[in-house]
Image (tube, rainbow, N blue to C red):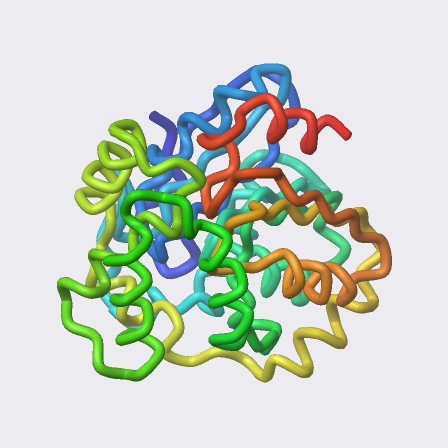
Amino acid sequence: MPFIDAPDGTRLAYRRIGGGPPVVVVPGGPMQASSYLDDLVAVTPHVSFAMLDLRGTGDSAVPADASSYRCDRQVDDVEALRGHLGLERVGLLAHSAGAAVALLHAARHPGHVERLVLVCPSPRVVGLEITDADRRDVAQQRRAEPWFADAYAAFERVWAGDASDDDWTAITPFVHGRWDDAARARVDRETLLRNETAADEYYAEVPDPEATREALARLEVPVLLVTGEHDVALPPRCAAEYAGLFRDATLVVVPGAGHFPWADDPAAFAQALDG
């Protein structure tokens, strides 16, 4: 596995998939090792990727300064990888919370970005509000599921601010288009890949969302935003508003999918990336 040194000296690991100019993959979690996205890159075998393990995750080193886990400070890590790869401009693919780093990188270094692919992106750094009503509308679509009653009751306690740890676990099925053995195994695996200390620091200090939105509105590169029909983290209505922040954005809603659309419908996800 190749490594680079971040500007602050932290040793960062990345993996090359394919032989052409790579798209840099920024994982979500926040702060999960990039290996949870192996299934994503597998559905698009004709695309080359450089999969970055964010600092403190996977095979990357733990930084000396814990505040460097902040999403705005990890922009420098992505920029260091771009330079290391010898690419003047790079495509960025980010999932979920990873969009914070990717979007802040695009806002700070617009001339170094070729394309953005945002998969169920977190709206935190652009200040896009997702209301409880938005999430309820999406959650209600799952009423026929055998787990719905218990999971929805837990969701109500989350919305009321009275949730226990068990409630947060109980709502997990809403994140997945299919709550089956494969999804359960994915949840178990991802729990082991996450750096909780880093995750707590990730959004500790987010730059002014309005300034970020203004910078992204000037971005002259194509943006693909993919979400799932049943994604309670980024409901389709909110995803459409998100896509509207960019000059040249395409929104794809994968039918029947949740927050991991490449797992719920690999063919539809691959078609979205190819489109």
